[in-house]
Image (cartoon, rainbow, N blue to C red; front, side, top):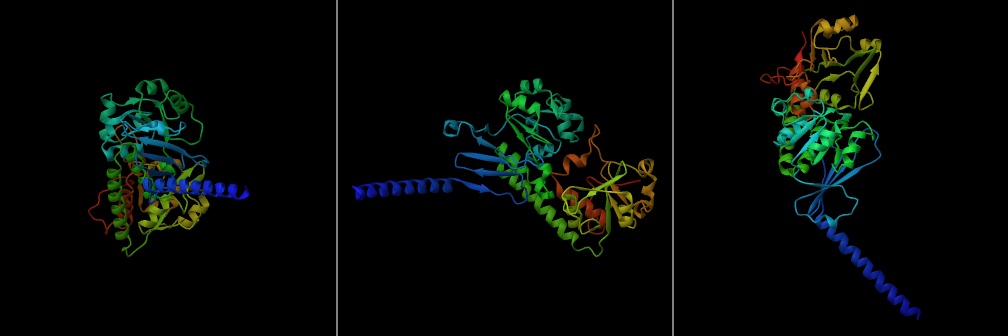
Length: 378
């Protein structure tokens, strides 16, 4: 009897192992991971009949991930777990909530799918502004408090959200109405190319993965070519950045994406060896002691002129770069309704940002390049 039980148990165990092996084999055959090269905040997994989009970093200090199943028409959704958030692709109508999303849509040629946006006055792109002016894109109020009645009436396939934390009542309201919300965390990426790689996120939603991959590859190549050109510079100018707000000087930390721009442009950023991926908050004396003789001042906050700077603080005049008028700002270049172009386009086109900085630091290397974002301050 014991021998009989042992034989039965062995057969059952053998069948279980074999079945599990077959399931695992099927998954491995039908699944391929699209690993991002730079972006860390999202992941795309392509299965035989659907795509799984995972948002790994939706907002700062998040310990929660969100998964979405992207399916094409006629897909049998009964084969998926009931808890799945399902989005049919390609999406036809969308609402986005950050100006950084606008260039992504335009690069893919799908800006006409945008039906609503909060604070449309901040959009600078001439192409998308035309859609706003002819009424194709509706005004939705504030990004933190969307006009949910208009959003529900527009009934977009998805809302691409922007969030500082987990709580957003507007998003919760439209989700209860059956409109999925995906939080886009592109702004949390730590590298210039990592931010731009979120183009692949939009490529997945519009079922245009190959086009998104191709466009990003071009941006990546242009960035790396510019970096290689900068490496040939015979000089390495010292760089000051940032400005004061209420007696506190904010400037990029040494591990930030801004610091990487300055490093890739072959400059000597004076705070390049500091820790941190965001901003440093320093007092004026510390900054003056380290950067009084800096060659170039890049991005002095929102100031558009030296006169404005002096109106805010006479201490700015103590820096050599101020005295020699070697200050470059992105605050001057604005769209038709006042939106700063840098904040909209720069995350999607880090190659253009890098070329601007190289032109500032090493003008002899890019003689024919025209500034896209920066301008010398008068």
